[in-house]
Amino acid sequence: MVKICCIGAGYVGGPTMAVIALKCPAIEVVVVDISKPRIEAWNSDQLPIYEPGLDDVVKQCRGRNLFFSTDVEKHVAEANIIFVSVNTPTKTRGLGAGKAADLTYWESAARMIADVSKSDKIVVEKSTVPVKTAEAIEKILTHNSKGINYQILSNPEFLAEGTAIEDLFKPDRVLIGGRETPEGRKAVQALKDVYAHWVPEDRILTTNLWSAELSKLAANAFLAQRISSVNAISALCEATGANVSEVAYAVGKDSRIGPKFLNASVGFGGSCFQKDILNLVYICECNGLPEVANYWKQVIKINDYQKSRFVNRVVSSMFNTVAGKKIAVLGFAFKKDTGDTRETPAIDVCKGLLGDKAQISIYDPQVTEDQIQRDLAMNKFDWDHPMHLQPTSPSAVKQVSMVWDAYEATKDAHGLCILTEWDEFKTLDYQKIFDNMQKPAFVFDGRNIVDSEKLREIGFIVYSIGKPLDAWLKDMPAVA
Ligand code: NAI
Image 1 (cartoon, rainbow, N blue to C red):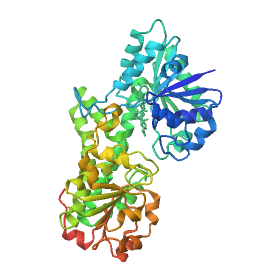
Image 2 (cartoon, rainbow, N blue to C red):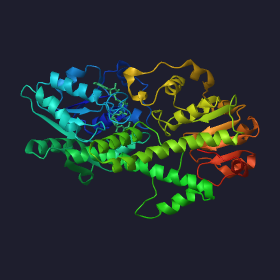
Image 3 (cartoon, rainbow, N blue to C red):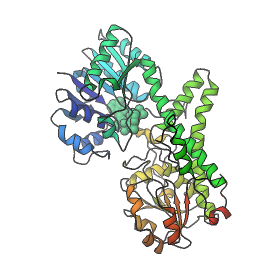
């Protein structure tokens, strides 16, 4: 019987392995992690991550052929195929700080595999890693090999949070990179056989190791670039009276461009886009390609610009100060249908408003108060280093409150910022919200999800990203 062990029970390791276990009942799948609370949560009714459909999949196979354990060494030693799905954050200090990927977690996983293995292994890079990481991993494993044969494969994950289960059930493609040797090809085939249980063969792509590693970074860079492109156009729309939704629709009708991922917003977030582009930038610089590095850097700069433009718009519209004013924030997760707040634009927006001394009241259906206070107290890039969490800062706590209801958050508020596109925000009773807010009452829609005309009829002053401005907002220009 094939036994799979996945190191790292996070947003990728958990759902990916649950789906493999569901689709391959004859394979034993064990997900291991050094974090005891995370494993306990995976073994409970309250899974550690929120993902539509995940509970169902886990319930069907947990205890049958899917297991979660902290006994990392035992399961690694027993497995034939080991997925490594640990975090690969941006380095915060030393060489490449602020750009390069921190492979500490990866390296320690690789050293542990070398220490405990007694039989041949296929080691699969599931984490997103810099191109050529497989070479480094191979060196660690083979220098400690005791005659064991290791094959390293790159099998980057393309799931999107919020739709992870759907994406895993029907992936656009599965990518497997391996060595172009007989042993390498055999290992690729072994992994292909796992996916072939439910993924059509023409969707399983095989490449060399470096192409697979680089494809993941390139895919994320292209996706983020689309968002920054439409966001850049949104600023020009506001300046000219064009409507970004109309422009994006017209642009996306071109079959060479396509309609997806063209929504203007307050900016992209999530654990991957920024870190992967920074990583790409660093790799380009290390390879003597400064022009290419600068090209991709601009994608992040526009994203930062979009967030500060939003904050400036809020402050300038409200008579150039939000000091002491209550601002309601609806949505804190980086996108709908997830509780993940890593790199969410809400962090930068809230920090910007706090910098102007606003009182913030936040409602998000999936994010806890603890999480929000940690996020607002943390330094940039520290969020993905679980061992180095910063203590929460009391000054951030005082100005921020967290409520479990959108109506409570907006009560007596001067302004309302929508920062996540949760469906429930589309159907709130905005008349009731308006009645309970200070006047003039402002709505700043960072996701373009509310019907701005209806809200204007109620009496709100409405800012929607990239849409023609109200006369009020035109008179109060925001300087980014
Ligand atoms: P995560 O932070 O949710 O999970 C990583 C887990 O690895 C943590 O639970 C941590 O305790 C564990 N871990 C770290 N070192 C370990 C060790 N030596 N032994 C055992 N466990 C260890 O991270 P997430 O989001 O699952 O991402 C993992 C990788 O997948 C990253 O490289 C990320 O870039 C990539 N990725 C993430 C996607 C996402 O949507 N979150 C999508 C595609 C790729």
